[in-house]
Length: 255
Image (tube, rainbow, N blue to C red; front, side, top):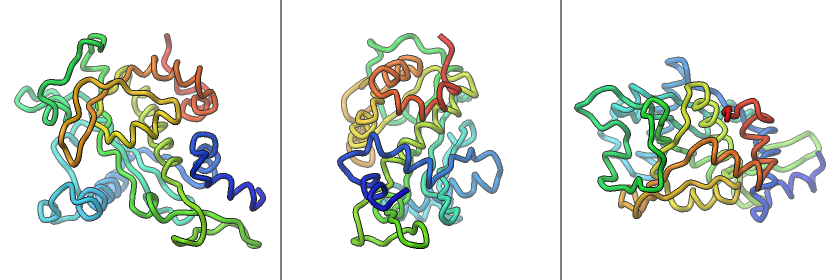
């Protein structure tokens, strides 16, 4: 890959077409299926949610691991940098709990009256909530890549253009899809930052609003997506994105 190609890859004007090669060259998806990997997911969440963004009180997590009761029935994935094996992103998929005394999904704690008129009837065992979609400050603000005579290197702010964030967002969506289909999930719920929804829309990934914005760490949009419908639209509008997140159709639900 030549230097000019790398510069084009990080043009902020072209996140849809360039995020795939960035991710394939620089990041890996790892499902957090061991205590060690889960620990890294919880520590990254603490870094992002407590220290960087101040969403949660640091004092509530003396072990510097941000967790809650929903982690007991969730699956998690990580985005790992190939440069130094650092953890740059994480997301969890909350599966339906079986404790009648607690909310089924985090969404039920936040949104008391979201609309379901335009949602198909949901089977709880096939529904999951996308949650704790977290990207580290390093990835969100500082990671840029350039070519040099001895290969590629990570650069500091101000040396060049940015951003790796769109590629990590796309990688997290790929991780969510993989975790979902491995567990028979057909429908997603989420409460998302509107800016994230706009970025996903640039990839052809559209979630359906199911209620008004709610105040939760800023204004957030409750939304819903049927996986099969979402993938069908992505394949029609953005076939390159569809090929990436489904591994050329390997992770794709049966009709």
